[in-house]
Image 1 (cartoon, protein in one colour):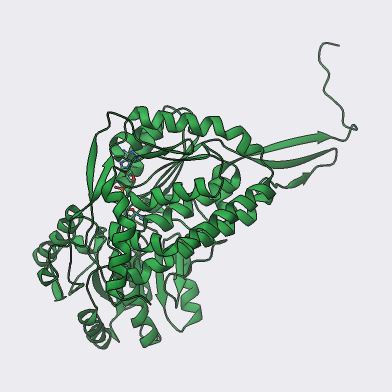
Image 2: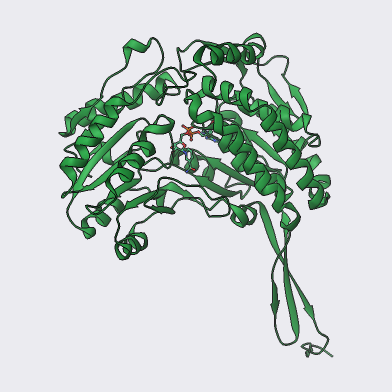
Length: 505
Ligand code: NAD
């Protein structure tokens, strides 16, 4: 593993081009910077210094990208699946070749520790390989027989689609959404989060190098309210896949109403991890710590509510406090860092505001609760644990999206279910028990799109990923992704034996 100094030197090398040149868009296979464009300064959360200027995309820029995606669509749709498979696998190879660059740029742009970002490029490539291999079968359907007719279904790609991604793990999430769209035969316009535009540009650049045809992959930078909005309104765009906040999903539904956009939303969560008295104590403790303090707590599936059964509460919380105190907060490029700086000063202020909210509501700040001023000008929050909390407090109801955990005690299985479900969200849940029957009952009653029993978040690419309630609409993964990006057509063929109704003979 590289040292902090090596990482810093390499990151400087890879970031130099972004610092020296304004980052523009990528449209129709080319970098594109409109002559009269306005820009904003993109900063690194490590010390809030500049990583360079980025274009503020306009509606006209988005229109150009959508037109390019529309023009490229017929040829991409008609390309044999086996060829798309080859191209997308080649693209995955190119991601792996640039894995170090991607990891370092990502880490500096979004503040995620390098220990986690090292895997981001590899996981991104794996996302592409998985869907690339499925490209030849994407059009497959069902055969549905009747006595005198045979129906069969086939799937066809919808057309150009818009993909709007957030800042928490920008590279991995972009690949997760874009790979199935391209494998299905859709062309794309990608709008990365304004706070973390850099690896989105690397992806578009790699697409060009890998030989993905011009116009198939377009990237437009800028703000959600302008560039994102126009993308969701553009008539050429047939569907919008958003990963982001619930409020953004509501905006997009309204914005896309005129053109009847199909939407797929992966939104926020306030996910419970429920630890019963009979759980494997050490494994549960490891998972509880990992699922809220990894990725800076800026993770949609983070378990931000710990529901702890009263029989082990004292012992578990004591062990947890020690672990939280021990977490290594630091610079994102330091390989020993476990918790890095939060993405932006605005988000940092939001997370810090919950320290006062917790006190006002009567909770105890058992660990953390303050800024790590010793780490300089970056957005460093001490990993925080709230205890003496109940589920009606704002710290138990609102998505804080930082390294902040709220612990809530319970006595019975019924209470655990009731607390777990007492939220507007329903993305994921984690159940720790050695009683299989109880695990099954909990799995049935906890309202969430995804539940893990005796495990942290383990991703299986063919499995459905998504949320219920305010956590989302739709599922990703395997064939679920193709169902979103494709239309299903039914073809009904008569056997020539049935009686055709006769009128006016
Ligand atoms: P956000 O909703 O503020 O922004 C997401 C994207 O939407 C950005 O690219 C932004 O520019 C764009 N956008 C904003 N307003 C828009 C509009 N009116 N029209 C079109 N686009 C618009 O989210 P964020 O703050 O970047 O990310 C954090 C959120 O994402 C959290 O709520 C987190 O839980 C969620 N998230 C969910 C998942 C999941 O899989 N469920 C995964 C990661 C993050």
